[in-house]
Length: 271
Ligand code: HEC
Image 1 (tube, rainbow, N blue to C red):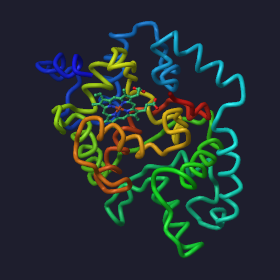
Image 2: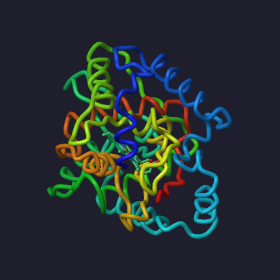
Image 3: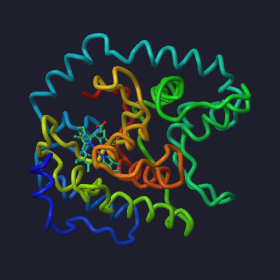
């Protein structure tokens, strides 16, 4: 980690943080990743770090070929989806469509709406109780919902002034330096993707949102995308930010848009 931290100092912006549309931002992303890993196909970016590291790829494939450790949890999520009446909430009635539609920018509230956000609202309506944002039920059910859309493509739309503003905020967060180490998400997951930080190889941000929620061996369970944001913020020694806050939702909006046209996958294992 220390080596990364000292070497990123002085690196200029290869991929800019100024306002631009999704297509040109994503093109800059793809061109950058192509320049550092010319042999990795676009479609392979759903596999995160395993697209970049042959050694851990073998291990990953062995896990997928066996009984992946998340299988029971996802199945349980499907039962919970019905048990808690999610099939009665309009926004979730068609789970595959819900996965593809979110996150989107809602003109009425001028806010980004995430899949987990509508799940929390639905749970409250159906049970009168609050649902967490990071692990347990919400991660299991969200993974099951995403499984229904496996093979479809991420398709985040940014097509109004309000949407663009939320996207720009998420993007500024992604490129902004923060925490005791004065690092940005982009430092590790764009400029240093493929390089080592301690025992980990850093994954490219392209494709980061195709297999969420993910199972992590380190967690011994499932977690939402925003649970992962929390972990990375902590590693950056940055101020914690609540999951499903406007800041995290805008970050997710930008981050998911950068995975547009990649397949949503049910292969949700990560180390
Ligand atoms: C100091 C380096 C570092 C910084 C800065 C950092 N991360 Fe990470 N991140 C990691 C490491 C290490 C992992 C685990 C290996 C991997 O998949 O890259 C990881 C994993 C992830 C994953 C899971 C990837 C997958 O394929 O499942 C996501 C998503 C993520 N980071 C998002 C972020 C976001 C968003 C930020 C900024 C708030 C951020 N990270 C900042 C080091 C970093």
